[in-house]
Image (tube, rainbow, N blue to C red):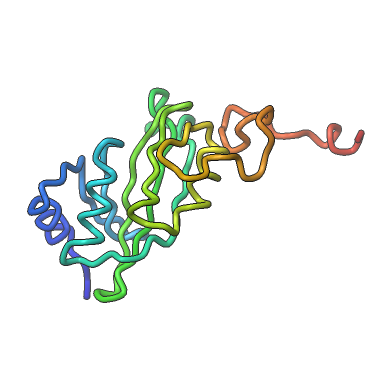
Length: 163
């Protein structure tokens, strides 16, 4: 089944979910952009509605603070949820933007597969994780800076060679 953005819009409207936009990208397919307050309702509607997006494949982030016209200094962290519907054989991506050191509300009660990706996302991009059963850091210690932000300098060869 080829998923149409008008169909996605009608399903989300029927569920009374507020979205910023539903677009079709040549490479990604359907991309739904939402406000952080609406992400839980959107994910629930996509999972429980007629589209049956029952599996969250991954959750990841990107720092968009330095990308030309798309540069966003107020909400530079873009969080993406990649969902799959096995019944309809299609994928969709739900995106939201958060500020650096913003509050990220867990969706673990909607998709349990987000247990580790949420922790890694918050640790790597400097977000505060709330409503998660185990919000501890996964990889780094508390004094370590957020390594995936564009503002963090890349280590030089001298730093690596002179250990």
